[in-house]
Structures are given as C-alpha cells and as structure tokens.
Image (cartoon, rainbow, N blue to C red; front, side, top):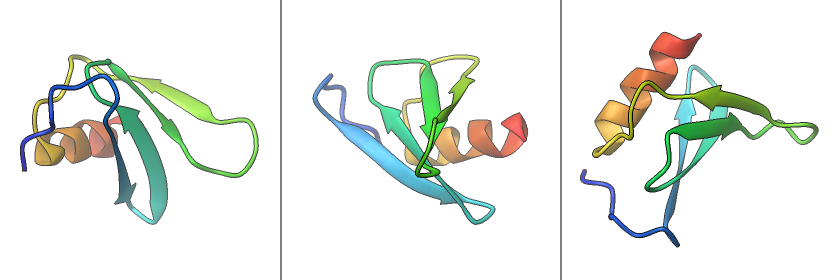
Length: 60
C-alpha cells in the first residue's frame, strides 16, 4: 500500500510483536511502548507500507 504523501498522515504498524509509529514524509519512526519512545532513523523516506515494515524489521 502506498503511503499518502501528506505531512498530517501517519502509519502505525506491528513488526515482530512491537508497534511502531511513522509520520509520513519523514525518515524516522518510533516504538510505541508506553514510556519514553525509542526512535529509529530510517535510511530513507519509505513510500509504501511494505517498505516501512522492511526498514523496521532490518533495524532490529
């Protein structure tokens, strides 16, 4: 699925049992863990949900 190219949009995805939040048009994501979020700097801005999941999977 293509990620909408809008700064007001975001995607939350579950990767290996952990939930991540990604604000569209950025190169970072963070883990939703109820406390201080762990930020992940992505190699590039993902354009699809599959690409985002792939990047997050490779980050851990």
